[in-house]
Length: 362
Image 1 (cartoon, rainbow, N blue to C red):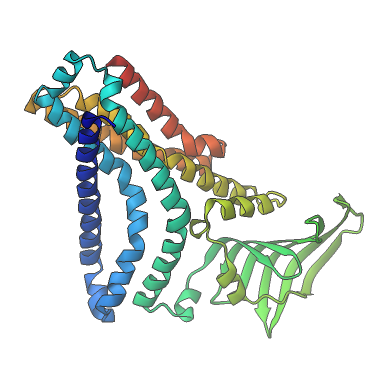
Image 2 (image 1 turned 180 degrees about the vertical axis):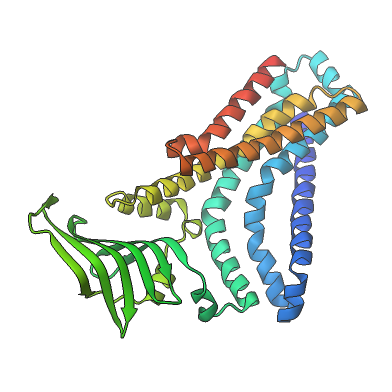
């Protein structure tokens, strides 16, 4: 590695670490003051509070790294440009690509690191974070019962897959029930539809029941109809609450397997939302590379203090616009007929194209 490359890389890493540390501390301080009344009221001890914020650090790291890297590039390259060091490098025969190569390589390394942390560390950290949060808030099962749970998908005993529109734990009531029974080869052998299910005296009683029987994936003629039917289902309402799948606590492989198992079902909206989550985790890992290319363009345009402030403001604004557009496309994918791949990746594709165009203009 050239001395110049080492100098630029070292400068960017130091500023990047400073930005990450600043944003982490800022988040912790803001969150601490927002929950100060609750912390004092619950008499939370210091060790639990430390564990609570420590478990959330990987999640903060993934979210703030792209914007932190953008700020680091603006500061380091802007400083070089303002002191005419970029002009000196160009006069020595170095191209823009030669000068910015260590920054681009570092952004790729950072993207891989974000991907690994997001896939391997964040799911387990989030699970620990939620457990500690519940411990701090002293959430009991009675408090959990007050909340209705929507769009529940659970794998139960006897190779059954449950899709429940609404679960009311307080009244032990299910609404909008679809149950798929599968054989050992995951072929559907029975499909049960019911408008409601009531758990009473350790027994499930379903209302307005329709049962479809299948053989070799083909529907049989004997469709069963019942106004009310006692069902042989061993799961209790609390089993459904405990076993509900949380995609955020799964790594990519677990999430992909979960999606593949659900694709045979008729819960298209649930499958689509999970696919959006899957693709978004992959695309978001490249955010550091995209913000780096945007930062390079604006940093190299800095000549004076006034232009430094304007370039900093514009690039920072574009960085936040990137986050906003990403959130908008995710929301559109979940509510309109936009494919999961486009919903998760369109904002990243647009800003990657925009950043490459900016670099070309240099």
